[in-house]
Length: 402
Image (spheres, helix red, strand yellow):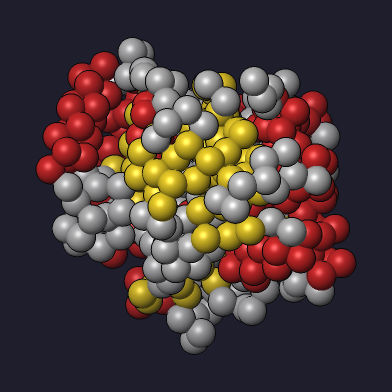
């Protein structure tokens, strides 16, 4: 154990849900001195606090992948945690609907995946669908996923952080990581910190941190902004739980969908717009020259190779830039929706999507890489929030401090 005043057994970069749960797991398992640093003034200010709050059930992920295994367990444990802490949930489940006959084979594939992955699901005819989600549209069949729930992610982040502090994890906010210093030291805006092992959970900047430690040179974060609308209260569309479309399983995005939050608000979205800046939440804010050049280069390669049908993603998201285009996507899911029902929603979130620059591939599964006295969480996109508790245990299991 390190005992110097500014020395820690573990230094965790990033206070999103992955950073906080890993820090807590390290503290519980090893009784270690753990410090979490973050450049923001509070925890979970990016994807962890800006997501839709859906606790996924393990529908979409190929059997035997890390996501499939950890999502099912994470769903159960997160719901147990919320019940124990008195955090409200909407447990009405989710329906996945077919917009055309071409969707039906994929719907069957999703049903098979739920059976293999251990999620609770049922295929419904239109009559049975009406009993669960009266306003949902489908062609021939729909898939009901009972285990899906919705929480308020900010409430969960606040509770998990309080638990971590009570367990002895230390936090330094307004404290960005700057660069590696000497061996087992990191330079921050608040001075140099010595550590036994560094854990990179920097989200949108995880690739930059990893590259500074000689890890993951062929990976780069490509940011996608998720914009939400919400249903006006006067809308005739009554969503009980979640209404999702059948997705294109070759792509990592699930499409525009309806989600009823525990407070009764219904969100519609998100879009998935590729950005020129890692924190381009609105307009041109957050755009940098370096990021812009890199993003244009990678987007060009993805477009040229059409890897994972990237052109179809780009075309779809360009349509979603307008309210009318977004409305058309949502209209295919719910009866009675009119364009006036969609009003400005909550602040957008940005997905830190990992790209393999050698293959121009958008990576779907979680990616964790080891470095010198360091561990780098490079791809922790959805369902990372759902999976965070078992994922933290998985990452700590991987660590081998030198």
